[in-house]
Structure formats: structure tokens, C-alpha cells
Length: 136
Image (cartoon, rainbow, N blue to C red; front, side):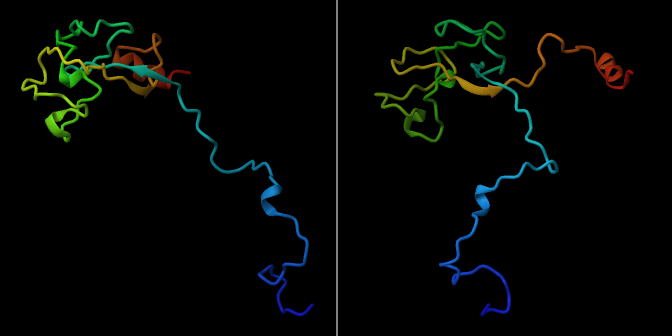
């Protein structure tokens, strides 16, 4: 024993020791990993924000507000910071971004969202929802 303290350091190259990362202990305290809700692909209307039904017609209109779905604002390549507000090499600028156009690069915008609403068991009346919190 040539050192004052028994700490491991750079001089312990010859001493065989147990690697701490190989010994995994199951911790029973601390925060638990949250149960994250599932993910799903969603298309939303660019005007009203309502979820479009699966298999919607991209050449049609939004069933809620009548917005033209084949427009720049509904496209996956629409970017206000890009040249001509499109990330694809369009030949000419389309002035009205919310009206129907015949762009060949059009692709409906699809996003990945988490399923946070419980679905059909959701209570629509706020009073019933409040009473459901405190019922025994």
C-alpha cells in the first residue's frame, strides 16, 4: 500500500477490477419510465385543423370546412422560408397558396402524432367529467 487513499486512479493499470457498468442492479426507487401513448399517422386540414379521414381524396375538399386539399398549404413540400415557398424545383411561383392548383410535386402533408384522447369513452359534458373525477 503505497498511497494514502484507496481510490482507483490512473496508476491502477495492473490491478484487475470489476467494471461497474457490468453490474446492473434493479433500482426500486426513483421515477418510473412513463407509459407513452401510441403513435399514428395523421393528415390535418391546413385551414380548420380537423383530422382528415383515412383514405381521403387529395383532389377533393375538406369535409369540415370545404378547403381545397390539392393546394400548396396542404402539401408536404410547402415551406415559407424556401425559394418560391416550395422545397421542390417548381418552374413558376404559385401566387395563391390556399387555392387549388395543378402542381406535379404535390404530396399530402402527413404528421406523426400521439394518441392522447381516450377515444369513444370520452365524456363530452364538462359537468359529468368533473363529477367523474371525484366519484367513489
